[in-house]
Length: 221
Picture 1 (cartoon, rainbow, N blue to C red):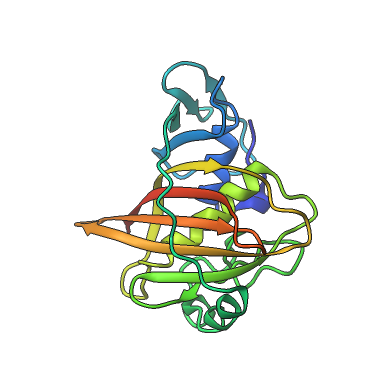
Picture 2 (tube, rainbow, N blue to C red):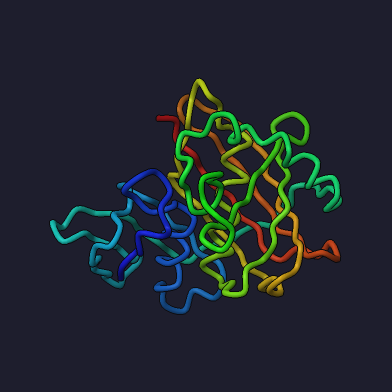
């Protein structure tokens, strides 16, 4: 397995959600519900070995443990949606436009161009909540949905004073969004404990149907 350089999060490592989705796809008989724990920043353009088992384990060429993944049961506790028009308005206040710890992030980096990155910009939508519009790309896939669910949850807790990175994510994909449609993604912080923040994110279709949901743990740097 190789995480291509295009799909970076922090410089030199894979976007957490995309990397987790790629790993989740390797879990045998997983259905659409998997939990992935990232043990180290996933390296880019590097052959990674995948060893089946419970949990499935991913190693780099030096045998460092990169991630582990197992089937799970994701309880749908959706983040209350806003309208797509409201999401567009909230997105204009995205903190990442003025301060972004990783501005080239594949998912939420403002330095990525349309067609190169997902350009999902989650703006504050009330206390501890974000909303973002998402123009679904032509090459949408389950792995890309995992990526799209990642940053909207993280930006509900990320601040200029304390950047966070993804540590663990469990996702449930009900259905893929249609290419070219305008979807809405919501994120929300549940609680914070020390360096950990527990967040949720939900992907909605243009008709307001839940397409995917994730719970995640983010770790302060």
